[in-house]
Length: 175
Length: 124
Image (tube, rainbow over all chains, first blue to last red; front, side):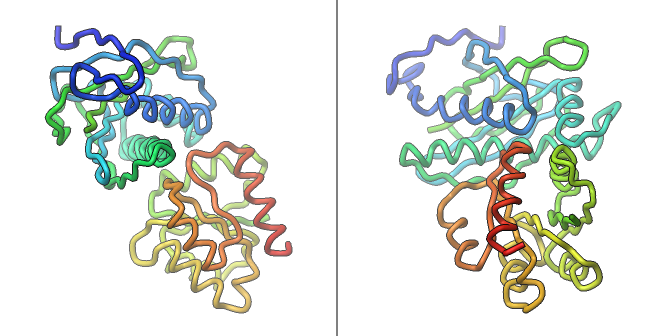
């Protein structure tokens, strides 16, 4: 199994001996706020997991580095169907397969989630700057998360048109 | 109302157009940076500008400054869109005369509110 289950500790308690829980909440709030405002979707978060492999979780992934008072990387990842649904909801156009426009829309969504997370961090006194997002298409693409600590993977569940459930993974490593 | 949407990402322009459509604004023209937007303003009558911040060739803040130094263009309500809610960038836009700004992510209601406030501030 590449993934191991993660038990969340109390506020400020080191997570897995490495990452404080207070660094996770801004990412959770950012993902759910952006889903609600931009997509009008209540994304339900599943159990966070600690990921040993530094690879993308879905088929199309937006990756962005963060620097400033802390450093790290976030990776927003969808399976094809989820990405196509996000594109349709954001842009208002149907698309049958992953094309450059869908890639751009995932990059923009990554940019917006990162911006929202930075705003949440700013409220806790941490200032961060972000790079331009990069989008990769493909499964299990190796990602350099910059940090030495493990990757936290937050799964967010949402329903698409036919009622089937899709997942957005927000993977990050932050120190 | 005719709206000029300025963003270097075609997909982001479509996203903004999609949100505008949800608040019944469908008369939209697009430009991919400040320079292109100035050409549009010189050839078409525009009622509102919604511009991104970070763009190549001419950024949103540079475009805003050019507009606000022009006797005619400064009358057009100008909304700046940014992904960063950081105070420094917002303050620079306010000092340069922006009529309103909106931080991504935004709902259709939030955009409508930003438009209404920008138009009121610009006396439209």
